[in-house]
Image 1 (cartoon, helix red, strand yellow):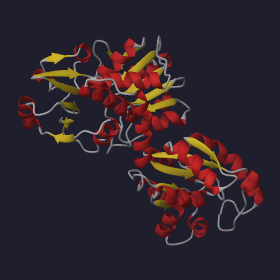
Image 2 (cartoon, helix red, strand yellow):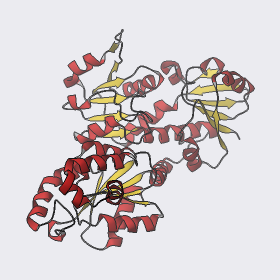
Image 3 (cartoon, helix red, strand yellow):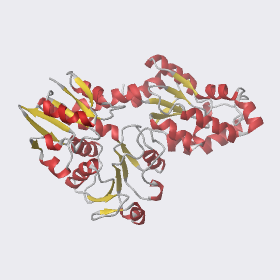
Image 4 (tube, helix red, strand yellow):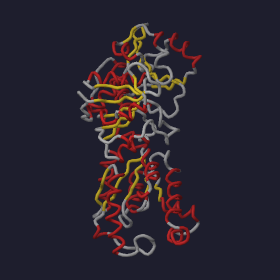
Length: 412
């Protein structure tokens, strides 16, 4: 059997690892230039292929049969060879639908704005409509059935959810966002189907406002699962999906530890690094190396603002890292941009230690007395809560804390 992915360029695709988790068969990456597509599809030297950008519409003329969903969507992302016939399917539509259902996102009778009008938008819109949602398409250019972004903002109070199907915010342009989600004050959820980075700026901004978010990685896994069922002509066990997501995210996603000074971040980071055999990053140590002096001296001579700028640059240097354990300084949550960099490809773990277990230190310029520690705790607690993905108590044994982090952060 010969299966694989066609597209150009393929870049940072997860496809090979995802399909390997579901089934152990050869899966190749066919990075086809436009002039190579015709020969590949006419030769038919494959049993099935997934299709990604920019060929989801270009492949249609080569197909003998189109699944009914494909006819409605006008895009194909999965081709199965049946004898000498090529059959086109759209599993993006299935993956998106199943992601909503699995996460209990109820869209029936809800007003959903879908950003973008391309093939992915059509797949998402079909899934939403079949689940009973009222869909409004949004684009930079107004036309029949499509509103502009200016109109979207004017109508913001009417929408219950937003789904981004544009490439805005995708790696390497991770600082971009298709909309200013802060202008929406009562959204139930925001979904971004981009899978790289794991958390786009759009999703970071939505989470910051307390809006529920879903990211493209889960849709990617679920559409691959649906493709495997088509490739192998059989139903697979749905219980394979969650372990696949946990395993791949566990291998690639950084674990970012935040919390008060003396909350035990460095100790836990070292223990996690040893248990998981991962590289440990002490952000304060890297900042000291950059400064060429101690943090206390930096605060005294150059002030906190200068220190925070350096902290942001250090965080930025790790935004594309993979599988690191990152121990942050206690005040990292004071700078939103810093937390966005750390959150892009990281799961943020708030190590919560009771105030009675925290203590002052002369080496820490902002927590040199018990009174200062108490005041800092009260001021920072809302920020730790705002940016954390999971919260782990760290008032007891190190091994217990490490076990809890592993269970909640990487599913084992």
